[in-house]
Amino acid sequence: MATTTAQLVLTSTDLLSDSLSVSAIATLTNAGGSTGVTQTTGLARKKSESTSLYILYDRSALSMPAASAHKIYIKNLSTTAAQFVTITIAGEELGRLYAGDWCFFPWSAHDDANDISITPSVSSALTIEHMLFFES
Amino acid sequence: MATTTATITLSSADIQSDVLALTKQATLNKGGTTTGLEQTTGLNKVIYTATTNIVLLDSTALGVGKAAKVYIANKSTDASEYVTLTINAQIIGRLYAGDWMFIPWSQSDAAGNIELAPSVATALPVEYMMIHEGATQTSA
Image (cartoon, rainbow over all chains, first blue to last red; front, side, top):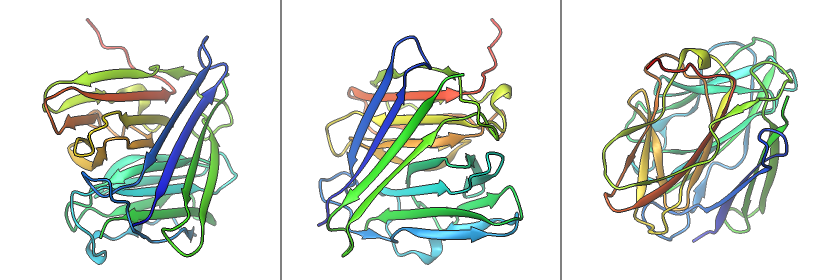
């Protein structure tokens, strides 16, 4: 098995009157156990040049168990503050990832319609990076 | 304005033949600007004792199309315990013990709440925080 960790550090000295310093570290394991997740798509890069919807992870094309502990990382590499990508799960809007933003979340992949997609806000070149960790 | 940063580090020496050592930092700004987000729910900790689906964060008009960020962590230490996260009844995924998530939340419509359902009715601790641009206050 593999050992993969994901750490988040949230910091601010002026969001609140008390300094904010939140740290969380997760070891990515298969659902309900302590066996490390063993598969990944690797870090991928996608350059879009239209405002069409792009499927990043096509559930029906991936051989993976449903209702598991898969994890997804996405980052918008744009440096233009106004540019964003809208992330959807099975058509339901999760949120907008603006320039420089990243996200990390579990994906249950519970049925074939449960695709992860992005819709860029601009038709000029916009690049994102993404990665999937998944159970076999 | 405030300056808040979120840093992720993904590490593994053996998930692939190339060592994974990715670190990325984001400064949390209002949508489409370089002005930092100024409002937060603060870091909440709640211990759930029922498997009932609950509204963790209520979608509001002032948040629609904005750049709110949401952090949620399952603080259980029992590997089998998880919480299922949904938006507008669409399942995002399960956070197992020790797992966390950090997502943008654009509160696409009034039904776009973030909801949570614990897998067990024994005490299951969850931490969560939203950093945002604004939230509509509910009338009494």
